[in-house]
Length: 203
Ligand code: MN
Image 1: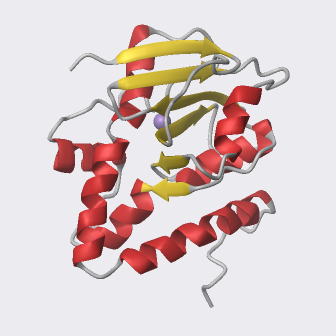
Image 2: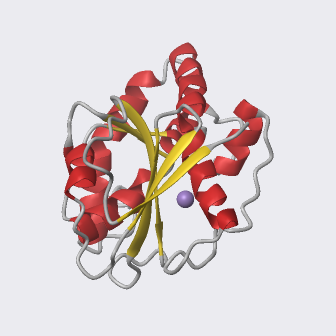
């Protein structure tokens, strides 16, 4: 399968229509929000395409992207949106609205497994073995073709995986639980940004 990868500097182009359900992922210099800047945002429409926005990390001037993130009418599918949304909020200064999340869906649907990595889900539902070799790589500078392909892999399968997980959630009567977890996601991100890192429900 050939993937149409487009690299954009700082923002999406003005006239780009990505539809009303997009898959999205971000790459950072690390997992500590304040220390580790947001480097990239990748978006796919689910049709073997990936739009990769590489930020000028001096000012994060990305009005077209921010409009999409903020838009309540455009659904965004993440895999573990908690980390991406925190970085987005901190660096792009916007809430991300209308979220789905394949990792949360997987934890609720696939209680037969304790592995909810994207690699595992791609293997189980798409039957492709993807390399995670570039997961820990330097996304701050010039990107190699291998890095671009890795970034694209993180978004191009999310629509199909989410569809499959939803089927299980409906069959197992866990769909309401999933929807209610999604409602809390924005608050979980706010807690992270306010340094409440632990599970606030634990004793
Ligand atoms: Mn990624």
